[in-house]
Length: 343
Image (cartoon, rainbow, N blue to C red; front, top):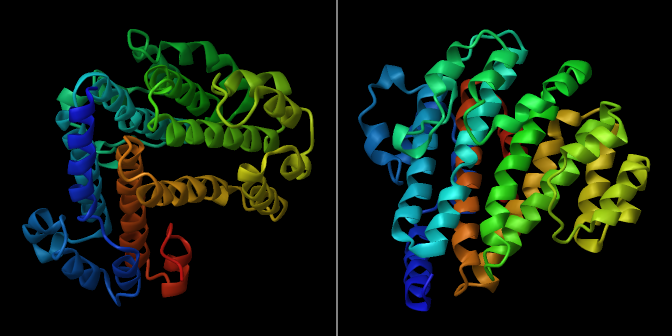
């Protein structure tokens, strides 16, 4: 990407960032009394047009979630269309995270014996994906989902079906999808100064999450190592191998300062039997570091990746809020489930 084009895209992203909901306003949404109050407050944001068109009786959490996710996809692909050259190539690869997430959602549903429905997926226009999602939704089981991906870039998950069957966890297939996705993204970002840092950090965090998750399921060290992304950023491969051979309680002492505190928090969660919150710990660090980049590297292309991650963070926070309000969860419960808005 030419220097002038890079400056233009970063500058444009600065303008887009102003449309993100501030932590203070996110707190106000979390403290709203009802789901209707949340919906009314969102009429002051970028979600206003679609929410304003909803009849009152259709303003439920599922419908609002669909609008939130649609806006998230629009934001990613708007930036991608504004980019040029290698940066556009990178953002095209990077935006495939929605495609990957939808495949994961379908696999989880089939694994649980549930009917996978289109409304449970991230709204992704046909032009943004080569995967035949209608066919995947109709698949009878996980094996058929994998078979239908045979002619796509996700073909390698076919090789993991036996390990999936033996382990009984979708984590094997989800890690395989991450491995495919991040290897391709890193192939473009690895030499792009600025963009590589947050992407490299996310790869490290995904690898740590895979290690922690599979070790709690007593998977073999060999299987766990095969499930990790073959990229070393700030997490040396030697350290990763040491983690595989040790107890999770030892992880904080094996990791560098940047990941030690996170590992300690993750290990404590597992000790308390709270494995469902494990993924949140890792994303909390990623989104926090993305927020820092907006301040420390305002002129680098890493600012673009940071903005996109915070778009993702905003979507997750809003979905937690609308879901919490529909379930009549307390204010504190909802606030504790949000990223980056606590006092």
